[in-house]
Amino acid sequence: MEMSELTALLTREGLDLLEAVGPLESSAEVASAVSRLRAEGHSPDLVSAVVGQAHLRVRARAKFGEFAGRMLFTRARLEQATRLNVATLHAVRMRRAGITRVTDLGCGIGGDSLAFAAAGLDVTAVDADEVTAAIASYNLAPFGATVRQGLAEDAVPDDGAVWLDPARRTAGHAETRRTAASDWSPSLAWCLEVARAHPTGIKLGPGLDRDLIPDDVEAQWVSADGSVVELVLWSGALAREGIRRSALIVRDGETHELTAPADADDAPLRELGAFVHEPDGAVIRARLIGEAGRMLQAGMLDEKIAYLTGDAALTSPFVQSFRVRETMPAHVKAINAVLRANDIGRLEIKKRGMDVDPAVFRKKLSLKGSQAATLILTRTGAGRVAILADRV
Image 1 (cartoon, rainbow, N blue to C red):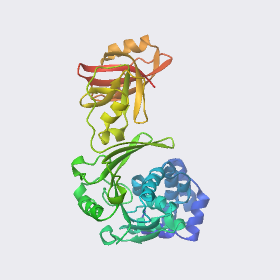
Image 2: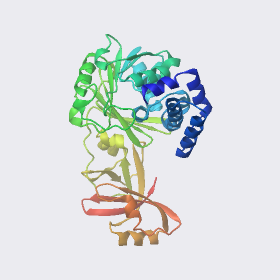
Image 3: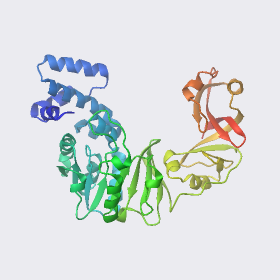
Image 4: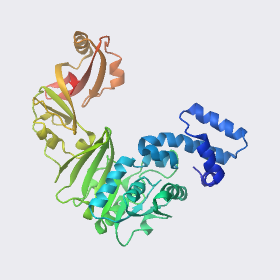
């Protein structure tokens, strides 16, 4: 969004028109709305802003729920924004640590600040981009947060906590690309300096090079509804004593957490048992697979592959569990024979340690039965295998 579009939108006419247009679900609805509004004589800037926001509000429901219908967005900043249920967990940690004031440096459209303010914290939100800061001001106005445009480096507070979400992509409100840690704005090195002086949470991508994580912070990987969405480095009063690795799982309105003082030793190798367990991505990123394995009385199927196996009829929120039906060589002919024998017509395909495209592989399979199952393609000490299994 350009400033001219935002200026046109942030008027009585613009906001009334946005409410009148309502949600635009599809590309066809977007095109129809553009034609109608232009025919009614509205300016190109206003039409672009209104239609863009009406469509983005639909996309934003997945992250912001009912709040999306009264917020403003840019495409890039919506993609980068924290989901509201995850932001709420950030706010809960702040409150539990006794924090009363937080400065959100790199606030984006204000997702985390919204949760902080709703939790009763005194919030100052700062973003370097003029359009983004203006959108954050609009989104946070009902919550009493203070919003400023400026550089993070110029806005470090004297007291209170700091929340940092450095820009990890090139500048822009639409298509952007990822950059190296040294090119972030502000840089990771600068963020870590702030974290040494203030209680701080630094939101980062979950794939961060682990060599860049200092020893004196708590590293928490967060998974929401099956996807690993972030890594947060917590420092000072926001880092829990004795915890340096955490996998936080958010699913179906519930949260579950696996913690450890350091990377966990892997569970020992063992042969395929009655069950296969696939650890959640946050558990894998946090290197807590061994902890999950010991909870399940399970071992590693292969030392380099994140599958656990065991005979105990156990599962946990930290894994997806499968009961093994039978195994076979990972060859199409052998697999098809087993699928026919088991009357399988609906098949979930999972793979680790094999260079296979499940969508392409599926086309080679004979799926004409009435039953459902899961096919796990993986590597073991004995070589490549296919495991027919059922979800627990």
